[in-house]
Length: 258
Image 1 (cartoon, rainbow, N blue to C red):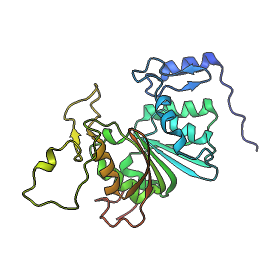
Image 2 (image 1 turned 30 degrees about the vertical axis):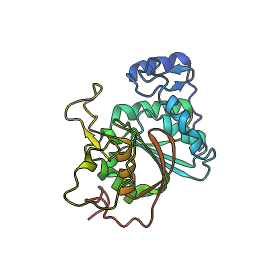
Image 3 (image 1 turned 90 degrees about the vertical axis):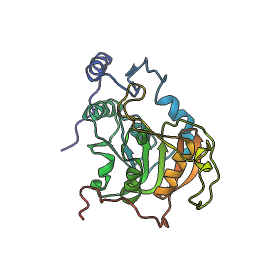
Image 4 (image 1 turned 90 degrees about the horizontal axis):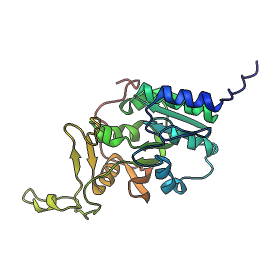
């Protein structure tokens, strides 16, 4: 039996479904219909994507991609547009996944969506050539644990990472160790610093930890990633350091046993 032909969406039907599934955080162009035309960040995430798109291969043929925290699927769809052989996109929010499935259908993108937390990526049971972790870290109560689990279970080669950053953009050159008496280093603007949000930031109670630049880079290195490109102020392209010797995640992800 041959596969059914993809549904041809009429503009009126797209507009109606976009309204039904709103509000949207990703401003997607679905058949000429914008999902979040009044986004407070402008044409987001397209405006962010333009700044680092050239840092990834234009042809992803034969490669697998995992999009962690996919929201409405903008980046997952872009990966399919570049010819990725397989794209898996996960999010813990069913409303975002419903938006993403609809967006992928309208766009004709064959993407596998799963409701899954970043803390349970081990349940996927596979690693991927490229892992996207964009706009996720500051929503996590346990950010380093998440990076450890990504390293341990799903990152095979490239990690593309982005986090909102606050504080200074300086990066302090640090020694391997300091004496117990050293205190001044902690007050320097370029020391790695993770700002904790107890209640809410930008009217979003899911914003928990916001790093400065030095901290974002230190977190990636500590989790076992080598930064190979920094194409945009908040974006890092990293490779998995296979010789990483530090201890990893404090617990195995669900589905991995142990």
